[in-house]
Length: 155
Figure (cartoon, helix red, strand yellow):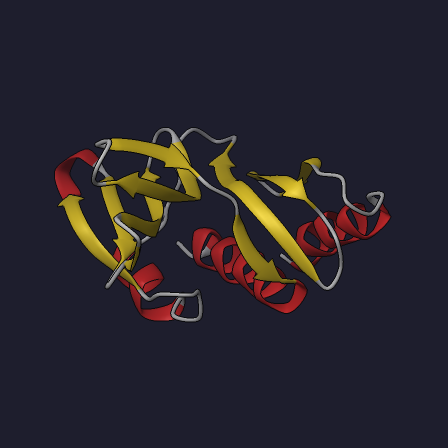
């Protein structure tokens, strides 16, 4: 899965400083899409990361993802698992709490719809949930892409 990761990282490296965008790559039957609000090296502001299978079903074990993707700001834990439906939700545990706002990564794995990862903020006072960019280093983003593509390509 090296070629898709290299393609995304190359696109990010060519993005003008301070700007974001949408970056795509494909390898085999896997397609990856990364949306950034800001793509400055050595760090990026990730809005969403999506992984889909063009063959129809994404084969990705949430238990392996939980074990192997352990280097984000907070570790991911499975909070919902519907094995018979092929759907799982993983969230940061524990989430970050600051000034009445809880922020966390949320990864949804659905064998039909694919994988999506983003960072959310929940304001306890207003009871609102919103997407917020996640600051990732270049190395962390590259490792995340590589790990997810590798896990999804294993049958």
